[in-house]
Image (cartoon, rainbow, N blue to C red; front, side):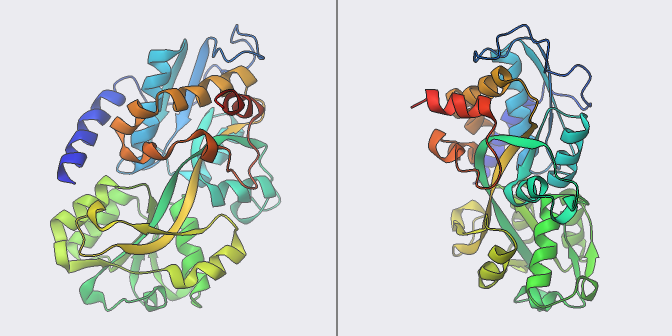
Length: 330
């Protein structure tokens, strides 16, 4: 696993070379110079909202931006953000053209629920890309054996307006606790891991691809002083809140653990506005399929990208351009 992490780090440096922070300046819409019925990206800008710098969104998003720059006439950038909720809000507002999101957050957005109550988002998706795995990691000396044991403990629930925060709050509430029962710290992953190391945080909730570099660092640094908590007993209640939650497993080799960890997984999607030109959506979707191996070199989570599973977006509508790209790959 250390070897994988090293390769990922080197690939990331290359992948982010052409990526930079920034909002949308010239929309990739309207005047791309390409026929919307084609799968030619045309010209313009594509700004991608990712997530925390130590998370998988940031790594894969940087890799995707580099591929767009290398393989199309679009000028792509990627930016570190607070992730899912913030990404969708800023895609809707026009600050970004595309954003990574957990499927539960995206389905809330199109339904006008949760953080998007009474504010349905006019968005669709380029497709399901890979799964996020819920990491609930605690200090062994904290005495936490279940989410219900979070009561009175200091727990990092992720960055404000992130998909991690949505899941963390739902885990707390479905355990029978009130949010005020927990000393919640709304921290990004870097600060979260630092807090675990210095003992100021008892546990964390994180939703990310496998492996997440910062979680690798945590287990490398703290070893047997930290452990995973199984949250699958709450799956049924979580599915009552949103149908996209699934039972899955974090293989023990991911973080050099003694045993596999049962957990709750959530699909990831890339969200765009519905007014993205069909040709642009088609081109980016086809690029992810054709260059899957290159993305997987940036981060192994991208190995999960497959045309058939990309269509499995549940209640989130698939952009017509992406639908065409996936039909043409048959």
